[in-house]
Length: 489
Ligand code: PHE
Image (cartoon, rainbow, N blue to C red):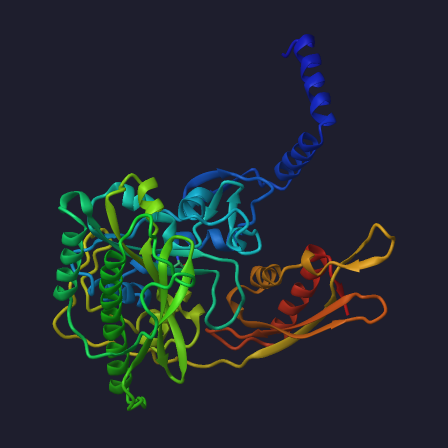
């Protein structure tokens, strides 16, 4: 039994807590979160405390154990192996846990405090200091710190709150790659530059049609890190980076074309075109994106650049210099295997999964990039059926709040489009193919804003009945009112 003194002490503390604004909010939150059972969140067997930043729904948590990039014969895994085969000898890190600190995901990479990527609307927070990684770059600093190889590749699941359509899913996969050279074992800058160019000469040659109109360094748009690098060093690093990645693209698109041809699909007579465009990332400079002209459009395949020296210095390897890249695996897998909808990668329907066989050995615990077999071909996906789409519209007024002047002001910012997307996914799961804003209107007198979204329901595995589509749509309408406070029209 607690003594009377202990009790009165406790109540004094509680009273003091109650008088402090932040403490009161915290207590209300703790009480509320205990009440709705939000105290801890368990992600793949690990427990995390939640707080007012927590916004990771259970549907996302349940994707964590899937690890599509390591699943035998899965197209995401085959795509990973195919890319790895272009980096023989690089060390692979393919089992890094997806829960990382805000420091790993953003700070260590030099993201400014007000960078939009840090917003709760864009990122899944486990709590204030912890997120589901939004990119594989979250592990760059740690792997550089480990200092176990000159070249490394990191493949992993990454998480972003995003739109719903056939090429976006809130969980997807990326591969990060980096190659560095250690100055401390080389005499001087001249020798370093010579060594890097020697390594460029060792890379396979290709006959790709590459457009690269910009100089590797541009003082405003794509600056040299002049405090740390000589121009000749950055140029040599850039040359090694570009040739290495062009070789990846040559392989991917040669395989994609071969697959399409073998499947009797029409292929373009035009030679493959790729182009380098200047880019910006907080953790590389200069930086580029590589784009490929594919089926009538320029497709962005990857981002890359010369690693910011501050990152390497902070990672305890100040004498290393080099490059890094990051690329999404889904987009590449979709074109390699002619997969029309990103949701299919998550399907456990054997009509999907039984269609693929990896030409590479299955060894998820391997830590070294393996070469490709001497000859193999990829078989495109044969759609098992296309079930009918059920489009339904929902129109609503955004919530209004009273302004200090007593009028009603629309608070467009109170509902973020990604909140709508997530709510739809929470209700309809993978039975929703596309969500699109089709109308937007502001009332001339009241100033209130109305939005109309078209939700396209379509199962990948069966025909949805009218009643099912209506039922899902009704639940979404209700949830929009209850969770986002909108007024249905
Ligand atoms: N992490 C970046 C992204 O997700 C890609 C990138 C990786 C860019 C490494 C440069 C270097 O967009």
